[in-house]
Image (tube, rainbow, N blue to C red; front, side):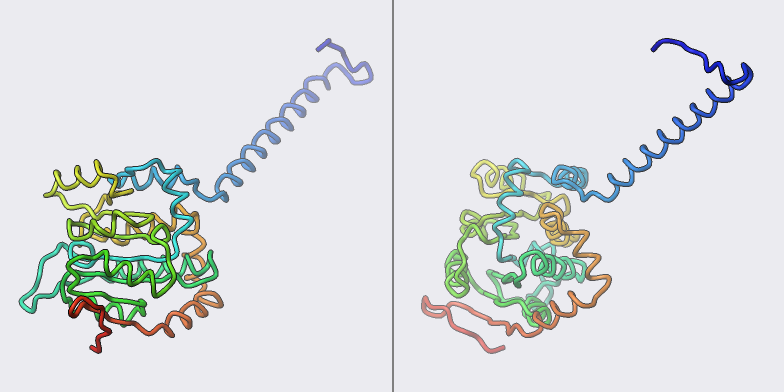
Length: 280
């Protein structure tokens, strides 16, 4: 740029003008930097941002995150194993095992988030190989649609559940932890395996045979279900919206809760090769 002097200004004013121009440029630079940061802060986490958070926690994505995200978009139902998923698999003297309110809240937020983004209540079920009284209590209190118990070949329960609600296997996300669950994991759209530190060969088998999409960083009984629920909300980019709507309560959460409470839970087990509705 050619140098020129403003002859109509006194020589002493040239320095002041340069200082004024420099101050304006400095102010504009700071303003645009602030604006850029504000826009960045308001942007939702990208899928890769979410993946990094869970990887730092110790979670393992077995498939690429972009493929994982595409699979999540198809989900319309959530199915959970019980023992080793909601707990560490330890039984009490009555032969049942417990659950955590942290995990229960995670599932409720997951259902609410799906209700918000899909304008429809997702279907929810527990499929267990044993009879767990605490699972019955959770299903009834939280109004899950179905609870299957004493199911030794779980794929039969999955097929029964899909037939009732007109679902496809790729529309189901499944939380599981052990060998009894693999017939379902082989079919479902999203497979989240709850980590246990004592089964490295089983984990290798599941990964090698394409039976899992994500392994939690937390172990069963240490809020691994909550981890998986938040992962699905985060990857679908609806976590923060879900929390905000729950915080405000009215009108969305109030409406969701009213619809949820109208669901009547059904309990099934196998008798002579057929599923029978049970009265508890």
